[in-house]
Length: 148
Image (cartoon, rainbow, N blue to C red; front, side, top):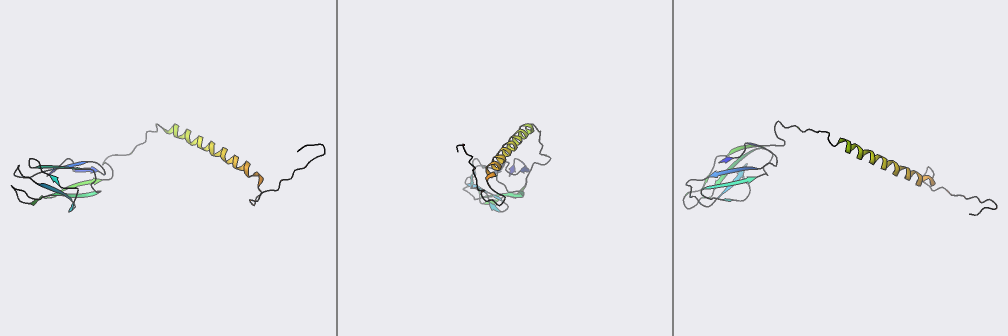
């Protein structure tokens, strides 16, 4: 059995290829990860089968293949090979180029201005209430000769 990479990052695709002798072997193979069937059986074509996945679990995984047997060869199981799945690429660092910083800052300033104006509206609307949250009584004074 061979694989396209011995070390991958989580979610990255990897392809396993297995060859069964004699080359005219028929039937299918079952790939196994850490001793458990992984995916559906894969049909052999010309004695070979390929299995591609991006769903290997994080950590060190042991992959093997079981051949169910066919008309020209009996059942067998391969030796396992090891693949390491890491959460981030080794030697990779996350960087920020700052390209959108001005736009992000402008957006934050606009949000602040919007919130400030919303707050002043709330204060204005709440001016009819006393400090205990009770509505103040409104008194209108009418002077002689004035209309309401």
